[in-house]
Length: 102
Length: 367
Ligand SMILES: Cc1cc2nc3c(=O)[nH]c(=O)nc-3n(C[C@H](O)[C@H](O)[C@H](O)COP(=O)(O)OP(=O)(O)OC[C@H]3O[C@@H](n4cnc5c(N)ncnc54)[C@H](O)[C@@H]3O)c2cc1C
Figure 1 (tube, chains in turn yellow, blue):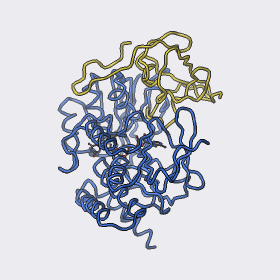
Figure 2 (cartoon, helix red, strand yellow):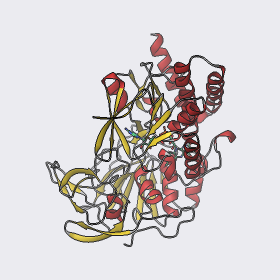
Figure 3 (cartoon, chains in turn red, brown):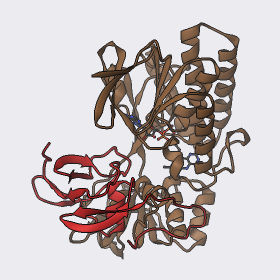
Figure 4 (spheres, helix red, strand yellow):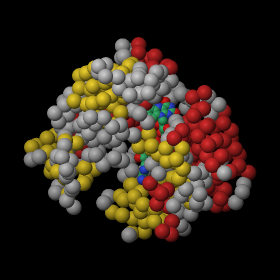
């Protein structure tokens, strides 16, 4: 877990407890309750899904739950907005390919 | 749908807990209304929760206070006043019989109030260029959220597109978080934001390329570089002036669009006024929309700034109360004072665009 801000001139970050979750089956660490997208970004993962027609890689855009660019498959459920969805222990997170399954 | 709150419980329901919604809620509660705030974030404050810089504005409006601290003050006041708050709750629709559909914990519930103050703010505009969909092309606000709210290093080297206040402030905050800023790119021949913000970032050695725009992002499955180009007098790219700048994030800071969705659902009149941010809800001087039970304020009503958002919120809150409880001197006093302060702020040359947009709407009404 390297890409977290530790020393900041103005801000202090309070983080939840460390949890393990899975990205494409690979175990990763994150902090409970942080948005899934934040945990993935900190772990160096930028590609969250592939577009429907051309299979182009997609990441997040707005990070505040408005643009739907960050939809992923979480615990088998498609179209989860990972910039808002809080991280939980043991979650299975996968890149969504095209439209999500409900 | 489960019924959560009904008209008997709630006088005024405020959608959006940013500075505009919070002020509307606080004023309404102070005037005796039973108020509910619904916001989709875990904490109240809207855009303020990521703004680490000290604010501009007038003395009375938290000038010199950091956005994050203003958010804390307002949220504290709301709680003190006993305002009900639903966090992590998204209003997904405005239904018949004036009912809001609220999604919370994977459950859709109904909320009904006598009056609504909609203060949903705005969303960031996207820009079209080659590979604009590559991961790493982010809204400037998104980058700000990543670093200042989530505490995640957003990237190693950034290029920002747009030099309005957001395009100037977020790069400065990137430097504070230890991220290199390679360039700020602005298509106009002058910086869009305040001079002080521009001066601050220039002092840090960040070049601002005026009369330039982005033509492409490069990279395999993430941003590896930005290609920028000079533009001519008609803003088209001048061939042969392209420059490739290595970076892993590209920030888009070219403007915001009001989040009008709920007002479309409700059938409120929406006008296209570019000076105010594009499609904006019609409202009168009381911040009432074309539907008498719905008020608006803040960035939703016109893309402006936090101090004006708060003042509009005060007017909306007071006038919504007035429409419920009848005309009273207290309501008038609050709304009139806020309206006067708004007028003073809008005399600044930076506000000329807003004033002309508002006038355009008035002309449209007369026509
Ligand atoms: C980088 C940056 C720097 C800025 N600097 C300054 C400055 O120095 N001085 C200044 O005065 N202004 C500044 N501003 C502008 C200021 O932040 C905004 O004008 C102000 O926050 C607008 O307030 P608001 O309440 O209208 O909207 P917001 O603060 O955006 O709040 C809206 C809230 O509603 C929520 N919401 C939206 N839709 C729904 C829904 N359907 N259901 C539930 N909740 C919903 C949103 O998530 C959000 O929490 C800056 C803005 C940015 C981005």
